[in-house]
Length: 127
Image (cartoon, helix red, strand yellow):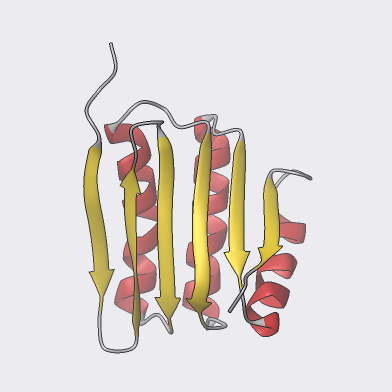
């Protein structure tokens, strides 16, 4: 039996934030933007995992990071924690779209050092 669509979870402040939801096709959709405070970064991975657990186990996670700025240590650790957690849950694939070359470089470094090869696909955004 398919569970209903999972409602949106979000956290933000004046500098940045994120939103997470799961659609009818059981794809977890994440939007991340700006610079994250310690509080925003601290809530990120848990929110993504909570949405993954609340609905049907997603096969993929799609991250729109087109407006995400390069993050401080706390934000980078939050991204690592999210990639590791969804991989451990059995998610098959994560796709990340980022426009900023610096953000893509940060993400490429994180992905290279933390998750299995090919699990995260980085794409250049159009902005």
